[in-house]
Image (cartoon, rainbow, N blue to C red):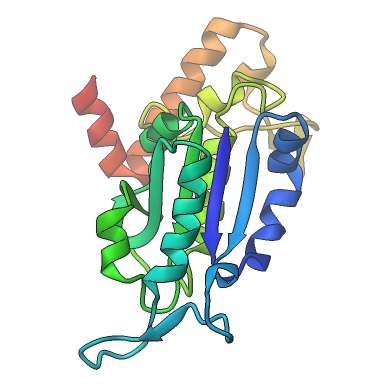
Length: 230
């Protein structure tokens, strides 16, 4: 799977993709992440990628020309299953959307910055807009990192235990149950006996009940969604 990320500040994304699971995924050849600095596609001597907003609104707007030049160069090299713009008014990123995107081969991500991009870019190229939450970031780079991480870990072979992703929170609209490791007793607090029983059937039933209880208490919206689906 390949991600091409268009950004004004590629240095913000170098760290997240060079460590841990995403680094190993790239080393295995399962994931490619390519960063494209939009300033390299600006044609003026100052490499300007933003300009004042028509109508006198506050804040700068990302110019159409550098973005279009970068997107069109990439489109000439390969087709893209999705061209995504990270935006506060996009579709909320959730596990179901991550699952769908993990089945794609090539994804292009445009990171917003300043007050956003020229609307004509959104109209001409963007096929999907994604938001990671109801708040505003300084730029779309962190949202792009979240997107790549949440989708990339679902690629078969990325995680050491391929079943692990199947039991993440939100995969079935339930939060994950509590987890424990050694020692079995710590500062007077004991691991639930059922987890030490070796009875796989009872352990699975316990985990499911814990997921239900935790979701009902902490995310009643998800619990109602789960009940409706059932």
